[in-house]
Length: 181
Image (cartoon, rainbow, N blue to C red):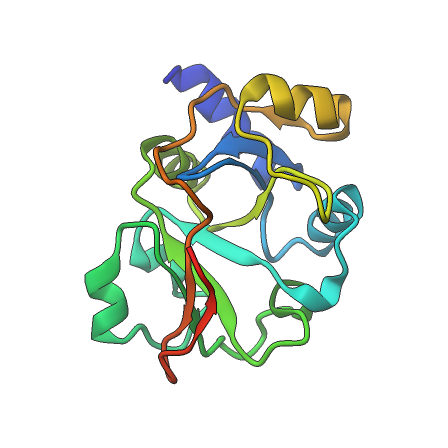
């Protein structure tokens, strides 16, 4: 992983841009979850309604402090790893991140490049699959470039992890599985 490419991607995120990057299962599209313009632009690119909400990805639990009230011990024990949890958001977490939901979806990734990007940016970032709604997620740099090209601000070269499916999403309060992995 090239440090200059990583720093370039982090700068773009901090400036309100959209970056495509490799995750556990597929390439993701990311931006600053607290930047309204960036998130709404990303949602337009995906043709995804705001009401669905988004996942926020972090390199470490401390990056989720602006997003969640508390992180229960079972959730902490599952990270870093391919486990997305629904937690109670902090007051002020924007509706463009939570959508119509009362909880926020968060994950601390074990994917080396995705974690390095969050570290370099100094924040948790939006993590949504690099595809338009209803399409199969892009799993390579070339596929992201073909689908989105100049519509995203940067595509960070990288390789997706070995996960055979998107991460499962589970409610940390009820234990309900809302998306199988």
